[in-house]
Image 1 (spheres, rainbow, N blue to C red):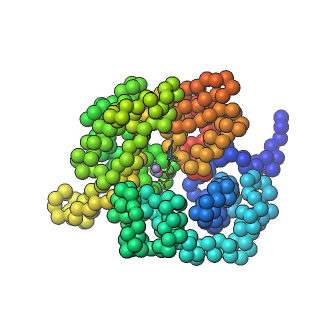
Image 2: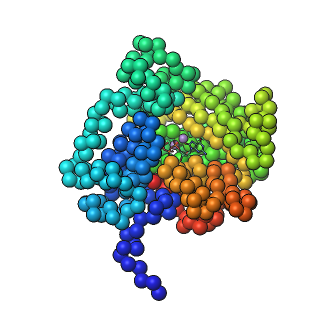
Image 3: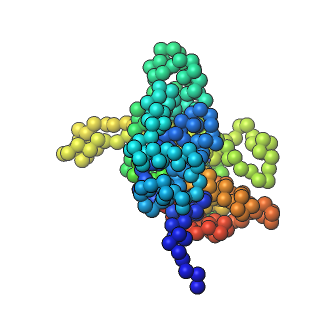
Length: 373
Ligand code: 8DG
Ligand code: MN
Ligand code: MN
């Protein structure tokens, strides 16, 4: 029998999908520092550097102890020279000069604020910064060009940047379930994303919709979205076509007039609720009517792809990225939110549960609560 050494037990696996990463971890100060420089790198268009810092932070999130010295890092994979230097500064001085400079820089702060507008990415934020714009009011004063998504984003800036509570997410599940029930009884609405990983708040609500009879879900999303819109639940929506059609030419298979193949919707909901003031538990008994704009991602999936969609939309982003990297480089398989394809056997591997996908990949099952990489 192979005796497990202390070193074996302290070993941290190279891919996030091989590690258990809880929501609450022991190295917050370090991961926040690394994630700041990761974000700054992305703001500068350095994807590679951003990824490297982000990976180092992710490794620390899975580490079961608080790192006290750089010597603790010798058992950890994926922590490069630069990350090590930042960690050392935080450990020795309580803060890293480099990280503090980033946090205080006008460029970083401005980019962060612009990116908080729904529909604004690094490219747009960077262009505005180059043009000398610095604040949200500068955008209005200088008549910055905004597309329709960004205009709605600006209009609901405060709401969309205040955390979505689990109770709000659950209220939205109910609304969407009610819409779905009218067009396709028996279809289910499942809460995924960060909430499924156990987060108590999120930046949006990620919902999967499916029906146990394959094919019944066709055309459902456009009906649901139209109904929600007609009932005043939608402040903005933009539907997208399924990105995966293995047997057909994507461009040719879509008729310009039908929305049947649209299966994703990025939207902003208008959630109304009565404020819970003591003594006004009944609707209409004097409580104030409160409305809040909430980002909602709706995804419709055929039943045969449900497990892949569930795994793909639960996240975290680091976990998903490493699942795909692991599949490709360690297993010669291609994983996405629809299928798993074995490139050498040239077959699609089916799965009726997330557990089966992990089995196909030869991975231990990691529960959603442990995917906070
Ligand atoms: P949060 O909203 O609580 O802040 O965190 P989150 O729920 O983890 O982040 P998210 O941005 O809502 O993303 C949730 C998952 O959704 C993420 O792990 C990857 C997945 N996802 C996208 N966009 C797309 C996409 O275009 N296609 C697929 N297949 N998955 C996507 O965010
Ligand atoms: Mn989310
Ligand atoms: Mn989302």
